[in-house]
Amino acid sequence: MKLRTIDEHCGELYLLIVQGTDYFIERSEWQQPLASLKLASGLKSIEYDTVRFDPSFGWCGNGDICVGYQDDLEAILTLSLCRFHFIWSALEATINISVPAKLDKSIRGKISNACLYLKQNRGFHPKFEAYLIELANLEKLLIEDSFYSEIFLNIDIPQHVNEYGKGIFLAYKLRNLLAHGSLGIPETQQEEESHLDSQIIHSITRLVLLTIQTLAIIDLHDDFPIFSWSYIDIPIEDALTNIQFDASPEDIFEDQESPFNKDQLKFEFE
Image (cartoon, rainbow, N blue to C red; front, side, top):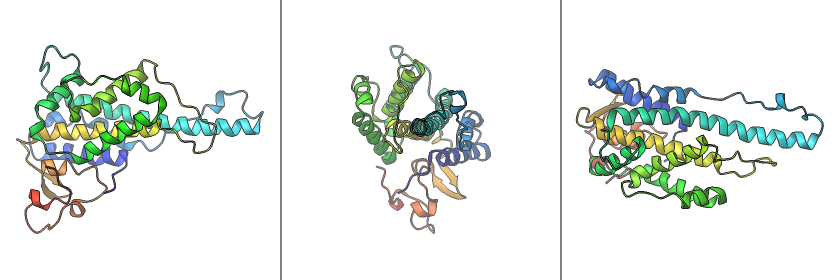
């Protein structure tokens, strides 16, 4: 089934959780943290123009064409990274309200602590097929790119990180490399030249969103077992493992005349 675009995914997830916790249960702590998802969903474009600072532009037609290709690539990366920034902010805020601090004093850092929490609570959420597929996609992209493959192969995955924490753990490592200036800007001189950077950013962004959904299932399940998704009452685990699909609940679930149950899922999450 087709996935929503990242901005649509942000918007739908924001509405599902924030409206649900606002109108149906007293869990107001979920209101403000996910506001960053609303900001991410509103990003349609960024005006990006480096030519205005390039005194050599206009002297060589072929050179100007190459500069244009590079600007197009950088504009895509800038928009993707800007959106990722807001989504990462939402993840950290979600961790603040849903993950107990310092589960293991030997494990340092908010992200590592969240990874341990996800591993400890593996039995409190269903198998998340879309997440596992996206994780495999990210690892495939990292291995295919000669630059990122070296980085990926040198990242040690600790024992407290299982598959459901691996997505944000890899995102955290790549984000730190970027923040500390260790990831360069890709260069292009051809139209539509293949670069995996944008695909990698897209994949880690998706994994962060899916991890927020997993944390929400674990934290809200007892207080809020049923979600209202498009005015249809659906078990929280079913809503939050399907909201990323570009489809209505009617398209995802069968037989709307009877109450939802696991046997009605077209996509089985065991």
